[in-house]
Image (tube, rainbow, N blue to C red; front, top):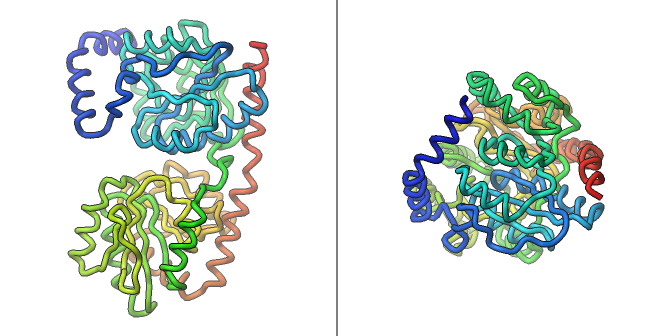
Length: 422
């Protein structure tokens, strides 16, 4: 009943959907050149032969799937690979990092007519769906074509679990479309089963399998020279409110740690100018990467408001605060910093990565703080004790390395679906 209602609404409200998409297009949230892909109109021809369609919502999910895509190409070279994502930022990143031979398309908006166009053109033989973005028309229409579907790295947050339990019929129908549901954790697998998945298990989190983030060697040399041995720390993937906290901490510590440099990489680079204005109003000398400004001896805050450069700044700074964990809620992926030997500091709101952060804490490989004062004290302590900072960073790297076998486990689960088409 709920799916019928959803399908009817998304069919009857076509003019509103097009108006909404036009607003997104005007604001730069849709790709003007490739906009037709959002309407299910393919941008390229379908290659001949078998095709696996891999769907990831945005940047984080698509990055976690890159090692899997590389393994699929290496071990099942007779399969073509189509990756869909829904955001402009993820598309730009995949243009740089998607392995050669794999195809990227924007996922169609979840309206029956758009979905039908997409499926008719691409005619996939296998569907791999990442994490928790459950679009009813896409999933049910795919299942109606008797396509084998596997949920990868399934995640069911506390909020999502509570919300989906209010619509038991719909979520059971959606999860019932999947032949196999692989949860990130045992808790996720249990929740997927409770919500209606027939075959759910956990073999680990694919985010552990991602390789170290890349960085341009020349940029590393340039920034190393600009920093010139100054004490520094990084606030990574910050959200609104956390940049102000970084500014306050810098003002509090700069006399105690002469030459202190604080680096901010905001989660949404488009906020760079706004963030810089706020920090400058606090009396902080701020340099903006998007404006081509460099780090000088007078720079207090360096604001790296660009996409795809976290690998660079993780290599430059030994101490990393994980954003969206202090003011906002949910946290960001700490594994990317851990893989590069950074000392990890995070706030109390890491619910999206709860099991990962618990692993860091149990292995004494990260520091959890509860508020702004705690973050200030942690940064102060780590700057004063570089030996402890090094030990924590090495422990974090070991935690990340110890889980690298998850990719083998996921490939083992997928192998029957890939081989049965041979």
